[in-house]
Length: 281
Figure (cartoon, rainbow, N blue to C red):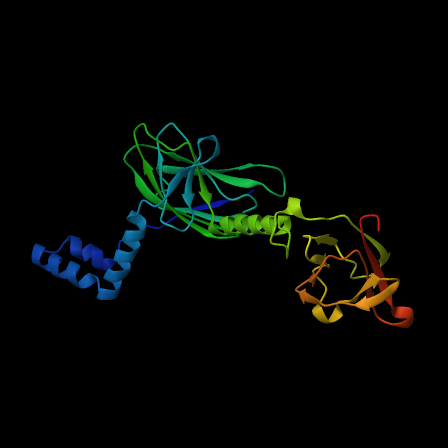
């Protein structure tokens, strides 16, 4: 793995050179004229973002966690020590640009299995009292990081929490909650009767049937559409009769407890049929 680390060129503009040799009055006028209102506003916005402390939390193994994109994270390092800045697993680094490449060294390292490796940037300052900035471009995002060197204090491990990861975790939790919820019935699952058996074959074969003692719930695969739902016949006295029911998404709700019923779809050779029986009936 090859990561290019490029310095940010420090070029002294001609205007700046003239300012350095100008008398005080001219210097004040030049400074006043050098920043227009939009530039001043932009500098203020950037300074506020760079100067905000943001949220810092503790991760695993003593890792310092910054919320990506909230502020410009400030990483404290120390001479003769290394700061380990860990990026997201699977993220590919394109470029690393450091403002001061003479007194700051950045070396790449990796961890994890192939295919899900995480890239680490190992940062080492040459002396205390230094401040510079680093920009890291990757296959997923761009990091803007401030680097500071302290005589003895430093952050051994640094990582990031990503907003999209939080959203993904929340979606996973909601999906698990939805999967564990018994649709339709407004009573605890332990009070439901799942003692129903199914016989027959159909592409829309119910995934489960249960009753709350008052109504019967027939749950179909999510792929079923209301217009494709089968017709329900309740078996009573050896005859099949149609009963009242309603479809809600992929759920058929029957207004009373069913002992035996037949679900039918299609006609002739294309007819599909599923028989539902409660308990040993």
